[in-house]
Length: 457
Ligand SMILES: Nc1ncnc2c1ncn2[C@@H]1O[C@H](COP(=O)(O)OP(=O)(O)O)[C@@H](O)[C@H]1O
Ligand SMILES: [Mg+2]
Image (cartoon, rainbow, N blue to C red; front, side, top):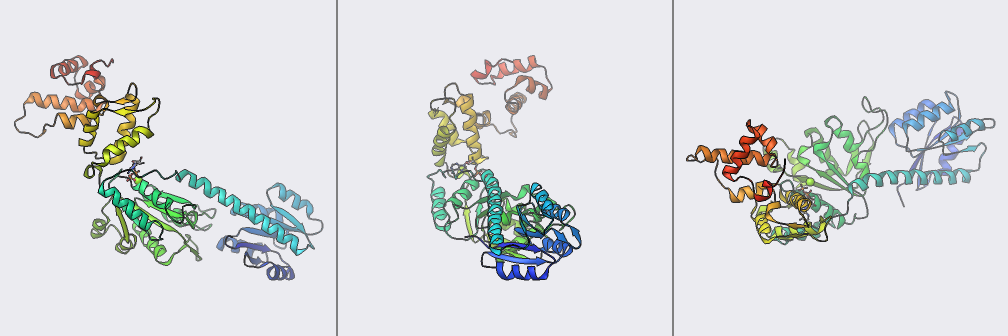
Protein backbone atom coordinates (compact mmCIF):
# COMPACT_ATOMS: atom_id res chain seq x y z
CA UNK A 1 0.00 0.00 0.00
CA UNK A 2 2.68 2.51 0.95
CA UNK A 3 6.41 2.77 0.48
CA UNK A 4 8.49 0.42 2.61
CA UNK A 5 9.25 1.69 6.10
CA UNK A 6 12.67 1.74 7.63
CA UNK A 7 13.88 0.27 10.87
CA UNK A 8 17.15 0.85 12.67
CA UNK A 9 18.21 -1.95 14.99
CA UNK A 10 20.70 -0.86 17.64
CA UNK A 11 22.18 -3.89 19.36
CA UNK A 12 25.72 -4.84 20.30
CA UNK A 13 25.18 -8.57 19.75
CA UNK A 14 26.25 -9.53 16.28
CA UNK A 15 24.07 -12.66 15.97
CA UNK A 16 20.94 -10.72 16.87
CA UNK A 17 21.65 -8.02 14.30
CA UNK A 18 22.30 -10.62 11.63
CA UNK A 19 19.18 -12.56 12.50
CA UNK A 20 16.94 -9.51 12.45
CA UNK A 21 18.21 -8.30 9.10
CA UNK A 22 17.81 -11.75 7.60
CA UNK A 23 14.35 -12.39 8.97
CA UNK A 24 12.70 -9.01 9.05
CA UNK A 25 13.58 -7.51 5.70
CA UNK A 26 10.82 -7.81 3.13
CA UNK A 27 9.27 -5.61 0.49
CA UNK A 28 7.45 -3.53 3.10
CA UNK A 29 10.33 -3.16 5.49
CA UNK A 30 13.96 -2.06 5.32
CA UNK A 31 16.27 -2.90 8.21
CA UNK A 32 19.61 -1.29 9.01
CA UNK A 33 21.75 -1.92 12.05
CA UNK A 34 24.10 -0.13 14.40
CA UNK A 35 26.45 -1.77 16.83
CA UNK A 36 26.62 0.95 19.46
CA UNK A 37 25.38 4.41 20.40
CA UNK A 38 28.04 6.14 18.35
CA UNK A 39 27.22 4.45 15.06
CA UNK A 40 23.49 4.74 15.80
CA UNK A 41 23.84 8.50 16.06
CA UNK A 42 25.65 8.52 12.76
CA UNK A 43 22.92 6.46 11.10
CA UNK A 44 20.19 8.72 12.43
CA UNK A 45 21.94 11.75 11.10
CA UNK A 46 22.12 10.43 7.56
CA UNK A 47 18.80 8.60 7.22
CA UNK A 48 15.28 9.14 8.30
CA UNK A 49 14.04 6.09 10.17
CA UNK A 50 10.45 5.27 10.99
CA UNK A 51 11.21 2.91 13.84
CA UNK A 52 14.19 2.37 16.11
CA UNK A 53 14.66 -0.93 17.87
CA UNK A 54 16.99 -0.14 20.74
CA UNK A 55 18.81 -2.53 23.03
CA UNK A 56 18.58 -0.87 26.37
CA UNK A 57 21.96 -2.26 27.44
CA UNK A 58 24.69 -0.98 25.20
CA UNK A 59 28.40 -0.95 26.00
CA UNK A 60 28.91 2.76 25.38
CA UNK A 61 25.72 4.42 26.60
CA UNK A 62 22.92 4.47 29.10
CA UNK A 63 19.90 3.03 27.35
CA UNK A 64 17.39 5.42 28.86
CA UNK A 65 19.44 8.47 28.06
CA UNK A 66 19.92 7.27 24.53
CA UNK A 67 16.21 6.68 24.21
CA UNK A 68 15.48 10.26 25.29
CA UNK A 69 18.06 11.55 22.86
CA UNK A 70 16.62 9.60 19.90
CA UNK A 71 13.08 10.58 20.71
CA UNK A 72 14.06 14.24 20.71
CA UNK A 73 15.94 13.92 17.44
CA UNK A 74 13.18 11.98 15.66
CA UNK A 75 9.86 12.98 17.18
CA UNK A 76 8.00 11.27 14.34
CA UNK A 77 9.64 7.89 14.85
CA UNK A 78 8.59 5.18 17.29
CA UNK A 79 11.02 3.36 19.53
CA UNK A 80 10.81 -0.29 20.57
CA UNK A 81 13.11 -1.37 23.38
CA UNK A 82 14.88 -4.69 23.70
CA UNK A 83 15.44 -5.53 27.32
CA UNK A 84 17.43 -8.29 28.90
CA UNK A 85 16.60 -10.06 32.05
CA UNK A 86 16.62 -7.48 34.85
CA UNK A 87 16.21 -4.35 32.77
CA UNK A 88 12.46 -4.47 32.55
CA UNK A 89 12.23 -1.66 35.08
CA UNK A 90 14.05 0.54 32.62
CA UNK A 91 11.69 -0.50 29.87
CA UNK A 92 8.67 0.37 31.95
CA UNK A 93 10.20 3.73 32.70
CA UNK A 94 10.86 4.30 28.99
CA UNK A 95 7.29 3.40 28.14
CA UNK A 96 6.18 6.08 30.51
CA UNK A 97 8.46 8.46 28.63
CA UNK A 98 6.93 7.59 25.28
CA UNK A 99 8.47 4.39 23.95
CA UNK A 100 6.10 2.41 21.76
CA UNK A 101 6.66 -0.97 23.42
CA UNK A 102 9.34 -3.31 24.68
CA UNK A 103 10.30 -6.90 24.10
CA UNK A 104 12.42 -9.14 26.36
CA UNK A 105 15.28 -11.30 25.15
CA UNK A 106 14.99 -14.04 24.09
CA UNK A 107 11.97 -13.21 21.98
CA UNK A 108 9.92 -14.75 19.22
CA UNK A 109 10.54 -13.08 15.89
CA UNK A 110 6.90 -12.98 14.87
CA UNK A 111 6.08 -11.01 17.99
CA UNK A 112 8.64 -8.39 17.11
CA UNK A 113 7.37 -8.38 13.56
CA UNK A 114 3.83 -7.69 14.67
CA UNK A 115 5.07 -4.98 16.99
CA UNK A 116 6.98 -3.34 14.15
CA UNK A 117 4.00 -3.30 11.82
CA UNK A 118 1.77 -1.83 14.49
CA UNK A 119 4.34 0.79 15.42
CA UNK A 120 4.58 1.74 11.78
CA UNK A 121 0.81 2.08 11.56
CA UNK A 122 1.08 4.68 14.26
CA UNK A 123 3.97 6.48 12.59
CA UNK A 124 2.05 6.52 9.34
CA UNK A 125 -1.19 7.78 10.87
CA UNK A 126 0.57 10.49 12.81
CA UNK A 127 2.34 11.66 9.71
CA UNK A 128 -0.88 11.58 7.75
CA UNK A 129 -2.62 13.63 10.42
CA UNK A 130 0.10 16.19 10.31
CA UNK A 131 -0.19 16.37 6.56
CA UNK A 132 -3.96 16.72 6.73
CA UNK A 133 -3.70 19.48 9.25
CA UNK A 134 -1.31 21.26 6.96
CA UNK A 135 -3.39 20.75 3.86
CA UNK A 136 -6.66 21.74 5.47
CA UNK A 137 -5.24 25.19 5.94
CA UNK A 138 -4.57 25.27 2.25
CA UNK A 139 -7.30 23.14 0.88
CA UNK A 140 -10.39 25.21 0.71
CA UNK A 141 -12.61 23.49 -1.83
CA UNK A 142 -12.10 24.80 -5.33
CA UNK A 143 -14.50 27.63 -6.07
CA UNK A 144 -16.22 27.79 -9.41
CA UNK A 145 -14.44 29.81 -12.04
CA UNK A 146 -17.11 32.26 -13.14
CA UNK A 147 -17.17 33.96 -16.52
CA UNK A 148 -18.52 33.73 -20.03
CA UNK A 149 -15.96 35.84 -21.85
CA UNK A 150 -13.89 34.24 -24.57
CA UNK A 151 -10.92 34.46 -22.22
CA UNK A 152 -12.54 32.51 -19.38
CA UNK A 153 -14.12 30.00 -21.75
CA UNK A 154 -10.65 29.39 -23.13
CA UNK A 155 -9.24 28.97 -19.60
CA UNK A 156 -11.90 26.32 -18.94
CA UNK A 157 -10.89 24.54 -22.11
CA UNK A 158 -7.18 24.63 -21.26
CA UNK A 159 -7.92 23.40 -17.73
CA UNK A 160 -9.84 20.39 -19.00
CA UNK A 161 -6.96 19.49 -21.30
CA UNK A 162 -4.00 19.95 -18.98
CA UNK A 163 -5.46 19.01 -15.58
CA UNK A 164 -5.33 15.21 -16.09
CA UNK A 165 -1.67 15.31 -17.20
CA UNK A 166 1.41 15.71 -15.03
CA UNK A 167 2.73 18.71 -16.95
CA UNK A 168 3.78 21.74 -14.91
CA UNK A 169 1.53 24.73 -15.50
CA UNK A 170 2.35 28.41 -15.28
CA UNK A 171 -0.63 30.62 -14.48
CA UNK A 172 -0.12 34.29 -15.29
CA UNK A 173 -2.09 37.48 -14.91
CA UNK A 174 -2.34 40.62 -12.80
CA UNK A 175 -3.03 40.45 -9.12
CA UNK A 176 -6.66 39.54 -8.38
CA UNK A 177 -7.56 38.05 -11.78
CA UNK A 178 -8.16 34.57 -10.36
CA UNK A 179 -4.85 32.70 -10.55
CA UNK A 180 -5.55 30.99 -7.23
CA UNK A 181 -8.98 29.93 -8.37
CA UNK A 182 -7.51 28.43 -11.52
CA UNK A 183 -4.80 26.55 -9.58
CA UNK A 184 -7.34 25.05 -7.17
CA UNK A 185 -9.63 24.03 -10.01
CA UNK A 186 -6.72 22.49 -11.85
CA UNK A 187 -5.81 20.36 -8.86
CA UNK A 188 -9.46 19.43 -8.29
CA UNK A 189 -9.77 18.22 -11.89
CA UNK A 190 -6.48 16.32 -11.83
CA UNK A 191 -5.76 12.68 -11.03
CA UNK A 192 -4.33 13.89 -7.76
CA UNK A 193 -7.59 15.48 -6.61
CA UNK A 194 -7.83 13.16 -3.60
CA UNK A 195 -4.25 14.00 -2.61
CA UNK A 196 -3.04 17.14 -0.95
CA UNK A 197 -2.65 20.50 -2.63
CA UNK A 198 0.17 22.41 -0.98
CA UNK A 199 0.24 26.13 -1.66
CA UNK A 200 3.21 28.32 -0.95
CA UNK A 201 3.71 31.96 -1.78
CA UNK A 202 7.38 32.36 -2.66
CA UNK A 203 7.30 36.02 -1.68
CA UNK A 204 6.49 34.94 1.86
CA UNK A 205 9.33 32.45 2.19
CA UNK A 206 11.90 33.49 4.74
CA UNK A 207 14.94 34.39 2.75
CA UNK A 208 17.56 32.53 4.77
CA UNK A 209 15.35 29.49 5.07
CA UNK A 210 13.90 29.19 1.56
CA UNK A 211 15.99 26.18 0.69
CA UNK A 212 15.12 24.37 3.86
CA UNK A 213 11.43 25.26 3.57
CA UNK A 214 11.33 23.82 0.07
CA UNK A 215 13.54 20.77 0.47
CA UNK A 216 13.66 20.18 4.22
CA UNK A 217 16.91 19.65 6.05
CA UNK A 218 18.89 17.07 7.86
CA UNK A 219 19.51 17.38 11.53
CA UNK A 220 22.59 19.53 12.05
CA UNK A 221 22.56 20.75 8.42
CA UNK A 222 23.18 24.31 9.64
CA UNK A 223 23.30 26.26 12.87
CA UNK A 224 19.87 26.05 14.44
CA UNK A 225 18.86 22.89 12.63
CA UNK A 226 18.60 20.93 15.85
CA UNK A 227 16.16 18.50 14.31
CA UNK A 228 15.55 17.10 10.90
CA UNK A 229 12.66 18.79 9.11
CA UNK A 230 10.39 17.91 6.21
CA UNK A 231 10.11 20.46 3.45
CA UNK A 232 7.34 21.27 0.98
CA UNK A 233 8.64 18.62 -1.43
CA UNK A 234 7.97 15.99 1.18
CA UNK A 235 4.59 17.43 2.16
CA UNK A 236 3.49 17.54 -1.47
CA UNK A 237 4.63 13.99 -2.20
CA UNK A 238 2.16 12.35 -4.64
CA UNK A 239 0.07 15.53 -4.59
CA UNK A 240 0.29 19.00 -6.09
CA UNK A 241 2.66 21.81 -5.13
CA UNK A 242 1.50 25.28 -6.13
CA UNK A 243 4.29 27.82 -5.93
CA UNK A 244 2.70 31.24 -6.09
CA UNK A 245 4.70 34.38 -6.98
CA UNK A 246 7.39 32.18 -8.47
CA UNK A 247 9.16 35.32 -9.73
CA UNK A 248 10.14 36.01 -6.13
CA UNK A 249 12.11 32.82 -5.68
CA UNK A 250 15.76 33.70 -4.91
CA UNK A 251 18.07 33.02 -7.83
CA UNK A 252 20.24 30.35 -6.23
CA UNK A 253 17.13 28.39 -5.32
CA UNK A 254 15.78 28.73 -8.86
CA UNK A 255 18.62 26.51 -10.05
CA UNK A 256 17.83 23.87 -7.42
CA UNK A 257 14.17 23.89 -8.38
CA UNK A 258 15.14 23.43 -12.02
CA UNK A 259 17.07 20.30 -11.06
CA UNK A 260 14.04 18.90 -9.27
CA UNK A 261 11.84 19.50 -12.30
CA UNK A 262 14.37 17.80 -14.55
CA UNK A 263 15.36 14.83 -12.43
CA UNK A 264 12.17 14.42 -10.35
CA UNK A 265 14.46 14.00 -7.38
CA UNK A 266 15.56 16.28 -4.59
CA UNK A 267 17.90 16.43 -1.66
CA UNK A 268 17.35 17.82 1.79
CA UNK A 269 19.74 20.53 2.87
CA UNK A 270 22.86 18.86 4.24
CA UNK A 271 21.87 15.47 2.90
CA UNK A 272 23.53 13.39 0.21
CA UNK A 273 20.67 11.03 -0.20
CA UNK A 274 18.35 11.73 -3.12
CA UNK A 275 14.64 11.44 -2.58
CA UNK A 276 11.93 10.97 -5.11
CA UNK A 277 9.77 13.96 -6.01
CA UNK A 278 6.48 12.61 -7.32
CA UNK A 279 4.86 16.02 -7.47
CA UNK A 280 2.64 17.94 -9.86
CA UNK A 281 3.93 21.50 -10.02
CA UNK A 282 1.81 24.59 -10.56
CA UNK A 283 3.29 28.07 -10.70
CA UNK A 284 1.80 31.54 -10.75
CA UNK A 285 3.15 35.02 -11.17
CA UNK A 286 1.88 38.51 -11.86
CA UNK A 287 5.22 39.43 -13.38
CA UNK A 288 6.28 39.17 -16.96
CA UNK A 289 8.77 36.34 -16.56
CA UNK A 290 10.13 36.64 -20.11
CA UNK A 291 11.06 40.20 -19.27
CA UNK A 292 12.57 39.11 -15.96
CA UNK A 293 14.67 36.60 -17.90
CA UNK A 294 15.78 39.28 -20.36
CA UNK A 295 16.83 41.46 -17.44
CA UNK A 296 18.74 38.61 -15.85
CA UNK A 297 16.42 38.38 -12.88
CA UNK A 298 15.00 34.97 -13.59
CA UNK A 299 16.73 31.74 -14.56
CA UNK A 300 16.15 31.23 -18.27
CA UNK A 301 16.24 27.44 -18.21
CA UNK A 302 13.76 27.37 -15.33
CA UNK A 303 11.50 29.75 -17.22
CA UNK A 304 11.35 27.42 -20.22
CA UNK A 305 10.81 24.46 -17.95
CA UNK A 306 7.82 25.97 -16.14
CA UNK A 307 6.42 27.73 -19.18
CA UNK A 308 5.66 24.50 -21.06
CA UNK A 309 1.98 25.15 -20.52
CA UNK A 310 0.81 28.66 -19.80
CA UNK A 311 -2.67 29.70 -18.72
CA UNK A 312 -3.02 33.46 -18.96
CA UNK A 313 -5.93 35.31 -17.37
CA UNK A 314 -6.47 38.80 -18.82
CA UNK A 315 -7.34 41.73 -16.54
CA UNK A 316 -11.03 42.17 -15.76
CA UNK A 317 -11.31 45.39 -17.78
CA UNK A 318 -10.52 43.39 -20.91
CA UNK A 319 -13.41 40.99 -20.32
CA UNK A 320 -16.19 43.22 -19.11
CA UNK A 321 -18.86 40.69 -20.10
CA UNK A 322 -17.78 38.70 -17.03
CA UNK A 323 -18.62 41.54 -14.67
CA UNK A 324 -22.42 41.04 -14.43
CA UNK A 325 -21.93 37.30 -13.83
CA UNK A 326 -19.31 37.91 -11.18
CA UNK A 327 -21.50 40.53 -9.51
CA UNK A 328 -24.39 38.07 -9.41
CA UNK A 329 -22.11 35.34 -8.08
CA UNK A 330 -20.73 37.46 -5.25
CA UNK A 331 -24.14 38.95 -4.44
CA UNK A 332 -25.39 35.43 -3.77
CA UNK A 333 -22.27 34.18 -2.04
CA UNK A 334 -21.60 37.16 0.20
CA UNK A 335 -25.17 38.06 1.08
CA UNK A 336 -25.30 37.91 4.86
CA UNK A 337 -27.86 39.50 7.14
CA UNK A 338 -30.43 39.87 4.36
CA UNK A 339 -32.80 37.47 2.66
CA UNK A 340 -31.31 38.24 -0.66
CA UNK A 341 -29.09 40.91 -2.13
CA UNK A 342 -29.72 42.89 -5.28
CA UNK A 343 -28.08 45.63 -7.28
CA UNK A 344 -29.68 48.54 -9.11
CA UNK A 345 -29.28 48.79 -12.87
CA UNK A 346 -27.33 52.02 -12.66
CA UNK A 347 -24.98 50.64 -10.01
CA UNK A 348 -24.34 47.64 -12.23
CA UNK A 349 -23.62 49.94 -15.16
CA UNK A 350 -21.19 51.82 -13.02
CA UNK A 351 -19.46 48.57 -12.13
CA UNK A 352 -19.23 47.51 -15.75
CA UNK A 353 -17.79 50.90 -16.71
CA UNK A 354 -15.19 50.91 -13.98
CA UNK A 355 -11.61 49.80 -14.78
CA UNK A 356 -11.00 47.49 -11.80
CA UNK A 357 -7.26 47.93 -11.25
CA UNK A 358 -7.55 45.30 -8.49
CA UNK A 359 -9.48 42.98 -10.80
CA UNK A 360 -11.92 40.38 -9.41
CA UNK A 361 -10.51 40.72 -5.90
CA UNK A 362 -11.48 44.39 -5.88
CA UNK A 363 -14.90 43.62 -7.29
CA UNK A 364 -15.50 41.03 -4.62
CA UNK A 365 -14.47 43.49 -1.91
CA UNK A 366 -16.67 46.25 -3.30
CA UNK A 367 -19.68 43.96 -3.21
CA UNK A 368 -18.91 42.69 0.26
CA UNK A 369 -18.56 46.24 1.53
CA UNK A 370 -21.70 47.47 -0.23
CA UNK A 371 -23.76 44.63 1.21
CA UNK A 372 -22.62 45.57 4.70
CA UNK A 373 -23.48 49.21 4.11
CA UNK A 374 -26.84 48.48 2.52
CA UNK A 375 -30.10 48.83 4.43
CA UNK A 376 -31.79 45.75 3.10
CA UNK A 377 -29.33 44.11 0.74
CA UNK A 378 -30.14 46.52 -2.08
CA UNK A 379 -27.02 48.02 -3.61
CA UNK A 380 -27.39 51.41 -5.27
CA UNK A 381 -24.84 53.82 -6.75
CA UNK A 382 -24.54 55.68 -3.52
CA UNK A 383 -23.16 52.64 -1.74
CA UNK A 384 -20.36 52.13 -4.22
CA UNK A 385 -16.95 53.46 -3.23
CA UNK A 386 -16.40 57.08 -4.13
CA UNK A 387 -13.39 56.39 -6.34
CA UNK A 388 -15.68 54.49 -8.69
CA UNK A 389 -18.18 57.29 -8.89
CA UNK A 390 -15.41 59.87 -8.88
CA UNK A 391 -13.83 58.49 -11.98
CA UNK A 392 -17.09 58.36 -13.83
CA UNK A 393 -18.73 61.58 -12.81
CA UNK A 394 -15.84 63.95 -12.31
CA UNK A 395 -13.35 63.01 -14.94
CA UNK A 396 -11.33 66.20 -14.80
CA UNK A 397 -7.74 66.01 -15.78
CA UNK A 398 -5.80 67.39 -12.82
CA UNK A 399 -2.99 68.50 -15.08
CA UNK A 400 -5.27 70.57 -17.28
CA UNK A 401 -3.54 73.86 -17.87
CA UNK A 402 -6.65 75.98 -17.93
CA UNK A 403 -7.89 74.76 -14.55
CA UNK A 404 -8.90 77.53 -12.19
CA UNK A 405 -7.61 77.64 -8.66
CA UNK A 406 -11.14 77.02 -7.50
CA UNK A 407 -11.54 73.87 -9.56
CA UNK A 408 -8.21 72.68 -8.33
CA UNK A 409 -9.21 73.28 -4.73
CA UNK A 410 -12.48 71.51 -5.31
CA UNK A 411 -10.74 68.46 -6.81
CA UNK A 412 -8.15 68.35 -4.11
CA UNK A 413 -10.70 68.46 -1.32
CA UNK A 414 -12.70 65.73 -2.99
CA UNK A 415 -9.62 63.53 -3.28
CA UNK A 416 -8.66 64.05 0.36
CA UNK A 417 -12.21 63.37 1.52
CA UNK A 418 -12.22 60.12 -0.46
CA UNK A 419 -8.89 59.19 0.98
CA UNK A 420 -10.29 59.51 4.49
CA UNK A 421 -13.51 57.68 3.74
CA UNK A 422 -15.56 60.88 3.94
CA UNK A 423 -14.49 61.82 7.45
CA UNK A 424 -14.48 65.62 7.58
CA UNK A 425 -12.47 65.65 10.75
CA UNK A 426 -9.61 63.71 9.25
CA UNK A 427 -9.82 65.51 5.93
CA UNK A 428 -9.68 68.90 7.63
CA UNK A 429 -6.63 67.85 9.56
CA UNK A 430 -4.94 66.56 6.39
CA UNK A 431 -5.76 69.77 4.53
CA UNK A 432 -4.52 71.92 7.36
CA UNK A 433 -7.79 73.86 7.70
CA UNK A 434 -10.47 74.04 10.36
CA UNK A 435 -13.52 71.80 10.24
CA UNK A 436 -15.83 74.76 9.82
CA UNK A 437 -13.85 76.03 6.85
CA UNK A 438 -13.94 72.60 5.28
CA UNK A 439 -17.66 72.35 5.90
CA UNK A 440 -18.25 75.69 4.15
CA UNK A 441 -16.23 74.54 1.14
CA UNK A 442 -18.14 71.28 0.99
CA UNK A 443 -21.39 73.23 0.93
CA UNK A 444 -20.07 75.65 -1.64
CA UNK A 445 -18.89 72.98 -4.05
CA UNK A 446 -21.65 70.49 -3.14
CA UNK A 447 -18.91 67.96 -2.67
CA UNK A 448 -20.60 65.10 -0.91
CA UNK A 449 -23.50 63.04 -2.18
CA UNK A 450 -26.77 63.46 -0.34
CA UNK A 451 -26.44 60.51 2.02
CA UNK A 452 -23.13 61.80 3.32
CA UNK A 453 -24.59 65.16 4.25
CA UNK A 454 -26.63 63.33 6.85
CA UNK A 455 -23.52 61.79 8.29
CA UNK A 456 -23.03 63.06 11.81
CA UNK A 457 -19.61 63.58 13.24
N1 LIG B 1 -13.45 33.81 -12.40
C1 LIG B 1 -13.69 33.87 -11.07
N2 LIG B 1 -14.82 33.33 -10.57
C2 LIG B 1 -15.10 33.41 -9.26
N3 LIG B 1 -14.31 34.01 -8.36
C3 LIG B 1 -13.18 34.58 -8.80
C4 LIG B 1 -12.81 34.53 -10.17
N4 LIG B 1 -11.63 35.17 -10.31
C5 LIG B 1 -11.28 35.58 -9.09
N5 LIG B 1 -12.20 35.24 -8.16
C6 LIG B 1 -12.17 35.59 -6.73
O1 LIG B 1 -11.46 36.82 -6.63
C7 LIG B 1 -10.55 36.82 -5.56
C8 LIG B 1 -9.13 36.94 -6.08
O2 LIG B 1 -8.81 35.82 -6.86
P1 LIG B 1 -7.39 35.08 -6.75
O3 LIG B 1 -7.50 33.78 -7.45
O4 LIG B 1 -6.92 35.04 -5.33
O5 LIG B 1 -6.48 36.09 -7.58
P2 LIG B 1 -4.91 36.06 -7.88
O6 LIG B 1 -4.39 34.77 -7.31
O7 LIG B 1 -4.80 36.12 -9.36
O8 LIG B 1 -4.35 37.27 -7.21
C9 LIG B 1 -10.80 35.53 -4.82
O9 LIG B 1 -11.74 35.80 -3.81
C10 LIG B 1 -11.40 34.63 -5.87
O10 LIG B 1 -12.24 33.68 -5.28
MG1 LIG C 1 -3.00 34.65 -5.75
